[in-house]
Length: 156
Image (tube, rainbow, N blue to C red):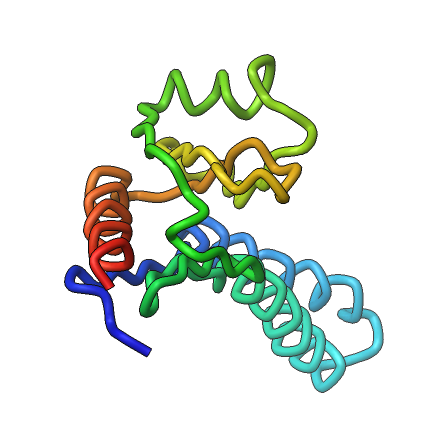
């Protein structure tokens, strides 16, 4: 397997405010267990915070990568030869493609806390998916890496 000339990897991590919310969930559990004593209070604080942090971390651990001749976005793996042109979406255009312009057949790797995105046409006639919508903090860099990977795949 040949590595792409412009490797790309991005982890769509949860925003910092979610970690504060995780702590506040732990405080809530501690307050619920307050009537039962100090040890249950501490257990509720630690356990509630840990459980909420695991949920926030798992939701925010999705990655977008270009490996060899494939785009891996979350659990989807698509050969770059099956992809067409990429369109960089600013915050306003990304919101439009998440709402009234959206196609129900599209693959959405959506993270609402990331305002920008990349929309990539799927050119494979066997695939019913019209496009990929990928939330990304660096849409220009991802588009460039996709173009470079497509050129490298076409050359080989």
